[in-house]
Length: 152
Image (cartoon, rainbow, N blue to C red):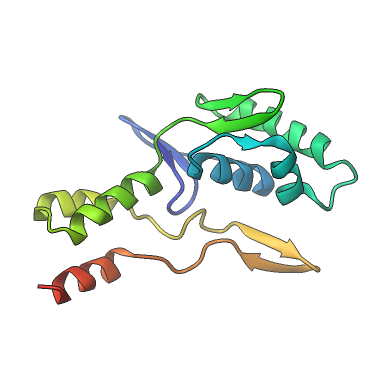
């Protein structure tokens, strides 16, 4: 499973394995993993590499970089790219919906354990020479718990 809640990592039966990726590669990976449809390469180049002299070349380089650092799941063709693997963010979203609908305490605990921190913790975007955090406050275990408890 690709873990994007907190510092980026891959999870398997042996545990968490941190992903040591360049910031733009992590942003690209997150975009591809959290969208449900393949993303057009032109759009990705425009969104992530607009400041580059040749955005499509930068995208091509970063896709190659991801291929070298990702064990599986990256799918790229001439027009689009996608990541096909489960993510902790997707599992957390599904679990949070179940919590709000009143699942058992053990199921809720499994979901809440997925939350290790903000989405892509530590990833910043630079605009006009200033850094801005990518992640934004979202549903955390405490806000989900308080909403669940207050709705009873």
